[in-house]
Image 1 (cartoon, rainbow, N blue to C red):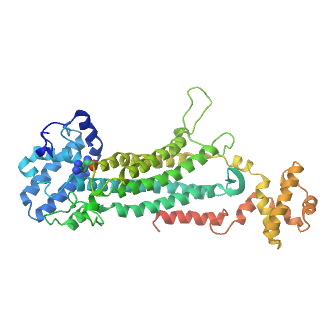
Image 2 (image 1 turned 45 degrees about the vertical axis):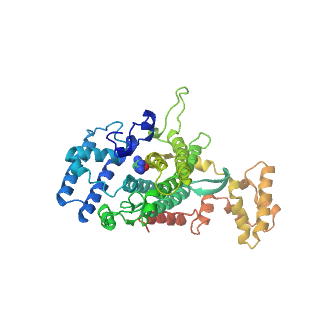
Image 3 (image 1 turned 60 degrees about the vertical axis):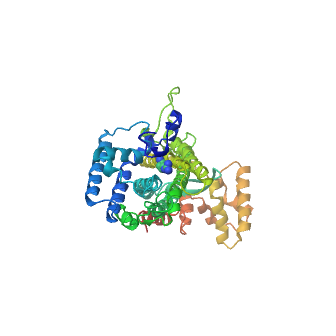
Amino acid sequence: AAGKLWGGRFTGGLDPIMQQYNESIYFDRAFYSQDIRGSIAYARANTKNGILTQQEFSEIERGFKQVSKEWQDGTFEINPGVDEDIHTANERRLGEIIGKEIGGKLHTGRSRNDQVATDMRLWLRDQLDQLESYLVDFLKVIAARAEQEIEHVMPGYTHLQRAQPIRWSHWMLMYGSFFAADLQRLRELKFRVNKLPLGCGALAGNPFNIDRDAMAKELGFDGLIMNSMAGVADRDFVVETMQWGSMLMMHMSRWAEDLIIYSSGEFSFVKLADAYSTGSSLMPQKKNPDSLELLRGKAGRAFGQMSGLMMSVKGIPSTYNKDLQESVEPLLDHVKTVGDSLQIATGVLSTLAILPNNMLKSLTPDMLATDLADYLVRKGVPFRETHHISGQVVALAEKESRPMDQLSFEQLEGVDKRFEKDVLKVFDYQKSVEMRSAKGGTSRSAVMEQIEAVKKALAGE
Ligand code: ARG
């Protein structure tokens, strides 16, 4: 085990498959800059407590500048079999640049256990900022379209059966409501991610009285993980991120599913831009909503990453165990999947064409059966009774094979004497949506209020 950080007590080399099974450098190199940033903060704190001289600190800082440059230029050479992970690799290279005499002092009192947790939190923090900006962009498109296209009315569904007329904007703002809550959850989650584990050591704490608060301040953390064993054991921040991402992808998947249905020939409410569709290798006429199907499919992948990590963590004993390394790859992929998905969804929605005439044509008078019942409610008839009466009108229309609004006034009167001439005004889709003006409803004013609510959520209000 020559050259290994932990080689002191080992004699033979690693089994080659074990070597590769154990190493994480090929994925945790994603944290190279966070690893360096954390190390510099650690070295600075160890200068204040006398472990390093000011001069030694300057050397370490200089060395890391070069290591960082090598990663950026793509000239950093990974030493296969020696550079087990990013921490090992950076420290090995630092020693080569500034000499082992000083380089060898860097890790005093530190463990890769507190180091990796610090790197991951630093990395995730920036990623969550990026995801937040993607989510904000998506919500902005939802709000803008909802405002522009507020006049269009379409069928609203329950059980995928025509239920009641709604505004197209109302449908969009249902998702606006889901995604605004996701945005709020993301902002709350950041606070828990942004806690510093550095200075926890391997598990028992730091014996050199390192100033953890100063490191937290330098690295921009909101506070410390207050128990050193928790600091190295904790991957809750990864689990919670993936729980958050899973819920967001669950919403995304339903959104995609709705649009897949609405873009089918049978519905034709919307038309996907070519930029987000693909053709069939066999059927020349096909245009498939692949972007939406991938959004739906990737939701399953995101949930799998979340539940997989929870299963890995649930049975491990206290503090650090190598199982925890299994949190890294799912996290990297999860964050990429969610980020890509948000960008795709934003692209799909900003280029989506709507076909309002087809929406209108899909409305049927029986979708106003509730409105007919409500008409009698306004004349003082109890709703349970009006529901029954309206049902009889639906049955009559079915028997007569004509739409409900084509029944004569006399026929309606035949069902119930309390219908008056003005009942025919019930059969008006615009009127139906405008009646629903209580907060949260589908009338113009209620929809405008929802748009304001989304805008407020964007502003963090
Ligand atoms: N690559 C490791 C991980 O991701 C770093 C921590 C290793 N610590 C240890 N004691 N082996 O978890």
